[in-house]
Length: 336
Image 1 (cartoon, rainbow, N blue to C red):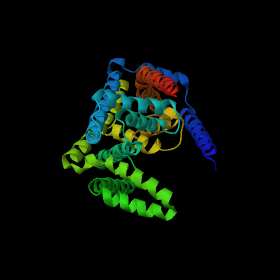
Image 2 (image 1 turned 30 degrees about the vertical axis):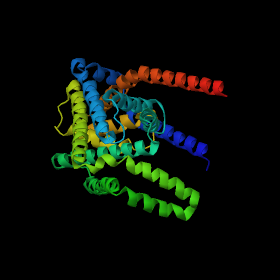
Image 3 (image 1 turned 120 degrees about the vertical axis):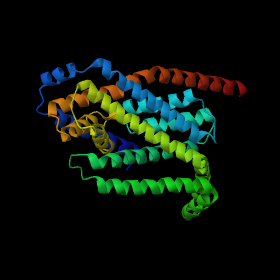
Image 4 (image 1 turned 135 degrees about the vertical axis):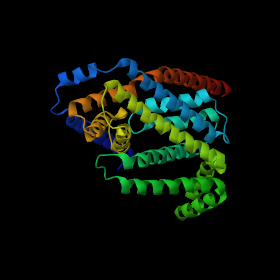
């Protein structure tokens, strides 16, 4: 199957899944009931939700500065922008294009190989997943609902621990990793071996920050703080609605969204976010109309503010890069 055909197939599946989940979310719901519940939201409380999201972007930038330190000294503002742009692009472009855009953005600014930036971003995602598992496991004994996820969580945590341990090992034994990768690739020919050897070398260089135990502890702590703040953001939405729910409800919502948003959907997780957020709230005893209202407001607060905030930055950066490319083209033509 051609790459273009496969991409359109994935987009089509995501669109169909989103439509199905939207239908299931709003089925048998009166829109007048939704409007009534949304109209009761306390806006002075709700506005603190984006504040927690802003703190999250700051934590991501700080964590990235530690992981990129051996490779390039990015400014905090640049790393903040890279995270913001990735988030916004993911909300408007399909196939998680924001992560790819961020890797290219970081590589170009720091004059680094893309594979080195990929290694850092991969470690960040592993740390995020591990932190989510820790938050859920710490809360799981107190959850009063029937959630048969203990075994999958243990398995996921074990796999993530193995991957993170592997990344730390690669950072300490890069020459062994490169040799093994090159040897395996050599079975496919000399050209493949040369390519893989070069890429594995720059990939291992991207993990060099993990040679420091202090850095490993720091980035792990920042990841846990990131997801704790995310839980607080969900709790703020619950307070804004005035719902009287168990204290662990934000972690239930986080659990449902973590697993649910892995399914294919449209950019911004339209449909999938609404379905799984509402399902989480219904799981703790909230009626469907209130649950869907919560999902609608939560999705809007999660997606809209920072997507709009990122657009001027994105347009400015895009315009600047086009101008630079035009100048380079003119200089090349004059040289010829």
